[in-house]
Length: 247
Image (cartoon, rainbow, N blue to C red; front, side, top):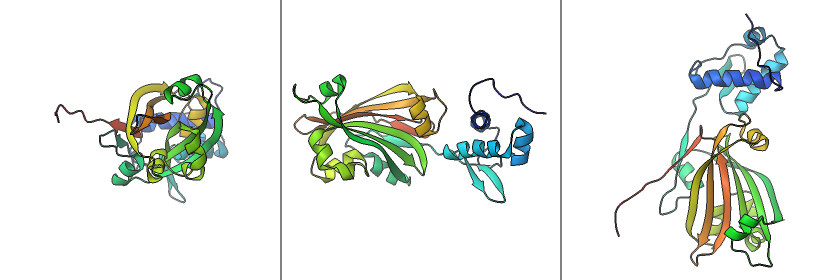
């Protein structure tokens, strides 16, 4: 018996991969369990082999399954990692390394722009200065896309550290070049995946995302970087320690 596909304008392979993703999320397919074969899926959804393969590729890109030639497609364990927003500062790379997680970066955008009004205000730019560097990085943990870091960097640091900033995380790059951070002010909000974010993070359009917003200051109370990082809540969470101890 075939299943009626959802009456949407989405491509068939997306509809199929979303149905399988929901089944994985619900526990119908457990970690280590094999998905139905290509022939079974072709029969179930009344589609071609290429459509089924594209659907499986969608799940693979989302980090939900792994394909083993000659054996089949198996559900992967969905590892969720936690970034500690602690004092003293622990940078993202360091925290991931401590947990045995491999982090990689894909630079999406690095360009000089005119700062939006809110960025100009946050970075306390002089009245006659609007130029900053905009950077967008895709962060992957163990090869799975989990967050897009969108940051605005003071012009002089963007120019001075352009090559390093495009290949490494921002805060460690600054510190290793003698630009020491005194504090980071941050908030956590909720947002939803736009089309661009959905494509970058390999999630459905409109998926709820965690939004980490931050501003970094040097010891003289000077803001030098601000930004936001929408992330997949199914793969990345944040922890905070609150203490009532007095110095």
